[in-house]
Length: 619
Ligand code: SF4
Image (cartoon, rainbow, N blue to C red; front, side):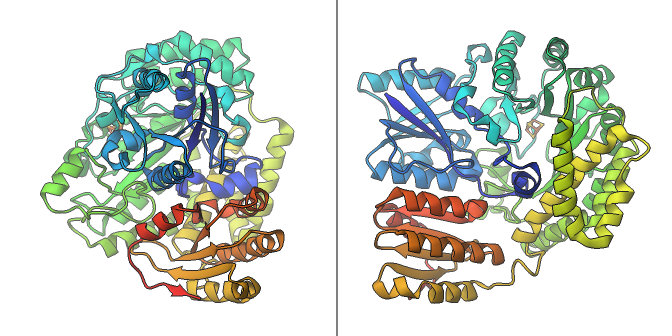
């Protein structure tokens, strides 16, 4: 059996850090590899031939040598996941859907996949494989109990192209004891945290080390969901680091009560944790209580962040606006907290109701859900809820203004200074080699700081902790993160006049004139569409062969359109023909990959049907 596992493209978001990956860190194409697919690969029968393709770091094979195609994905990937399932199914492959969104809403996949595997895979996937081999696979496999993580095999890290990612990933635990109203984690993984044994973690770290990974993100829902287990693992990790030259650099997700336990903080530092992501949500204690996030209300939130900083651990955090008590004044409150705490990676999102969460059920009862609205990514100024004390327009405008204020050069510098004023000594670890570090700093200076002119250079200089050189890497990292988030906000929220200068109509006119030769021959047809609740799209339909001159012209012109406008592009091929030119074209457009959709053959009909009716300008 030849199995191809696919991780669909992620739409670009603040989390993509695209500017940092492409312009500063060099050679990296995405943040994290698809750990779930590597785990699934390890659960396959040993005689199966398994290959993993991540669309975020490499082109998809259009006609793979495979007997089965498995496509996973989170909520943000669901639209692309369904398109790929349709495409491969129509191309004659047997397809199976999985991943976190298919686990939450398996019913949405029954029409587009031959099989759906919903829930944790450790027991289900081997059953599906066995059923398939004996010729009697079911349409739906659903995990109802909780998997023991001791039964989870070491993921097949060797099938991932780890060198293309900024960080490797590993999972120690699943589940979280809390009950935040908006959280889908506890719906999927339950409230009793389950942990792997230290010996399992050792095996996984050994494989990652052998493959050259040095930065590892523990993708746990809450690393400290069971503090006793977490401490046991941290002691083991500290010993592991000593045995292996303290070369691994760790980060994870945890709850805010990390700050209340000095022993835990010290263990985190000793184990080599450089950062922790915390769901802070809002500094308003009453709102937190209403959202059942009471664990964040036990003390002074700003003081808690500073205690974590004082332990030498950086804080990344999630914030939410749009709770029932939030008025337009909430933006100033969030801004003040984020500036004072000095959190640079502050991911602010609009409150979004995910299916099967208590929030979803409540808002449904109250008639405050927008049916059919996208709910996968809450950092794109879109939501599926009706806020209570402000209008949607006030909420999205306030949200964009908040980011514009937080990402101004002066605000980036202020945050760094506020953080470093409370920051302790970071963990002793082997970091980048001097040459590599110099290259990163040079790219930041040349491509980020210098481009902001004298004002940005001044703010950069005043943010540097010259009296504490050990903290310099932290300031450099924060500038890289801040400028990457700003680059995203400029392109997606229209904060930059230059990038949004070309209207969709002008983009279409430009393409019409530059592709005139092929339009006359009937090889290319163009259409402009304005789907509801989404950016405009230019559909480029290619009815003949994609030869080299056409591929080159398309690459040049489409790159210009994508660079200068916020238009998306749909490239639709009626037949596939020669793959090589298509692969060249997709590589050329790779930088804007999240705004380009490629559809082949029958998939074209699906694509055009799935868009809400809109006036289309055909040539
Ligand atoms: S602390 Fe985080 S993982 Fe736990 S229930 Fe709340 S939002 Fe979910």
